[in-house]
Length: 507
Image (cartoon, rainbow, N blue to C red; front, side, top):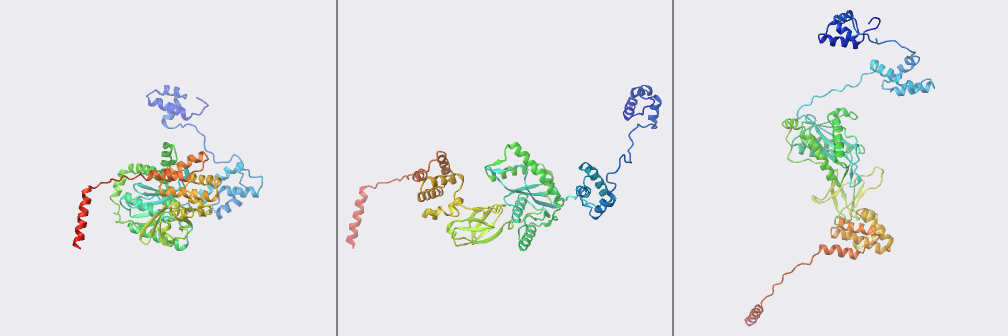
């Protein structure tokens, strides 16, 4: 049409019509242009009109007065300065002149200057992953959901091992924080499941594991890490501190793993587990699915893995402690009770991530669950009444003012029962009753069943009768034995008398 520019939509309609072998006249009519314009379109002489990109300003530059004299010198001196920092400098120097509405314009201006005249930026070099070459380890926190064990928040992190080529992975629940022990346990568990070891192992800098260690301890842990890798024929390497992308083959999979866990928890409908073992089994199912989906690559990588040594290497730290007269030991600022028969002995403690193995000389003695210091600095104890109850039963009055009194009570039910007994009975009887209950739980191995009885009594606000409890639980454990008696014949006694008379005659 005369006087109106041809747009791209008209050109499109015309060319589609011509593609269907429509005549120029009819195609031109359909697109609203003249036949002459149609012929020019087909010859490429006529292009649709469009807005030309302008390269000029339509308004005054709001930063023209300060850009070259004040902003550029600051950027040339320190190119890492952020736009918001520079903008706040202007706002402070020129009050009321640079409102927040101009911030976005200023950010674009700074971004463009850095792209054209700023310093070179760090380049990420994508690595070619070779079969059987590298395994990677890292720790990660699971923040998507709050995991609870029997209703109590379970503070933990996850150790994650992964093969760079195939993506085969292993996950271990770590009860404490990052440590060499957690790394050694998790890595050896992973290699045992895998059935071989790669040629190189990479971890992060373990800065969190070394945070509170002295220089000598850090050097010792570093040497042990090198020995661990050497034991499995792996070259040990670490990425530089703060350079997470150097561990990129596991940093990104962290997110995928945690998303899978989150989705599995949504399907499960609950983040609460009865035991830690149940939670670990839940994670193992997720990991098994991940590895099954990579079966082809895993089988290919298995051909290039190194054989495992015959035995695991040391994956614990060791400490020698003496048992106090209170039947306690102190390990890493945490107080633990041990069986009273060990009082005065020097014990070797093998410290794992989730347990302590106790040895007297070379003889294994006991395993204790490991606990960790609290972040608020409050003292932490791991007390088991069964370790000291025999002695406490002989002197029950020591219970009332014992420093370990509240810790000796195994759970909230027993604690609530002590409060009820203490309110309703005199001091001597209250101590004797509570200690007798603990002794009964230990002797008859009925802590849970006895706790259920105490819970019913608490609902009725009734103090227990120790004699009745002893009678109830002891009788069920001590059935009356059945004795078979064989009556001898009287003739046997006559024979015995005859032998006796003969013996006298001989003498």
